[in-house]
Image 1 (cartoon, rainbow, N blue to C red):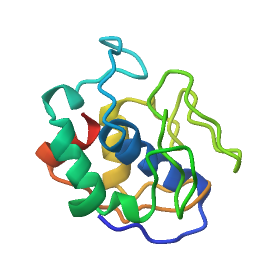
Image 2: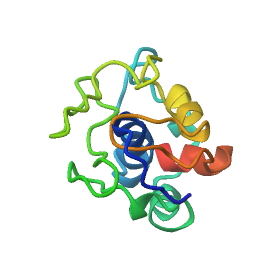
Image 3: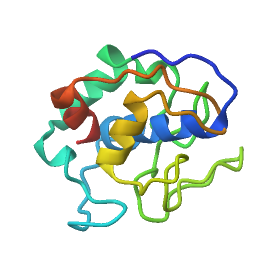
Image 4: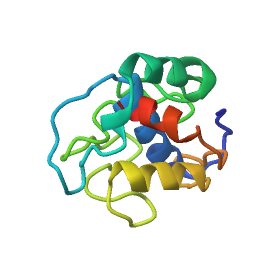
Length: 138
């Protein structure tokens, strides 16, 4: 998926968090079975395939970095960690998504697919299919 530039900060953050944090970073670190950082989608995903989705098929890398650097959208490093980063744009990944929902993989996937918006911009409102989403989050 390709990012479009829309000046709504939190949208880009949430989407970036989905793409970069789990998939691009390739961080399959242990997480609690429930709670804001539960890893349920990523459990069935493939990290190498997720990197390809992030860099190519998904188009995530056009707007997001796997570091904390902001491109068009925010950097995604650490966005699914419990503490979550706070970016220079004052966008915080702590606790909840920009839409107020708990920060879980399922909520993040739904938010990305719905074209969620936030403090930096908006996503396109389409996302990878279920298998590619699981790979992206792995």
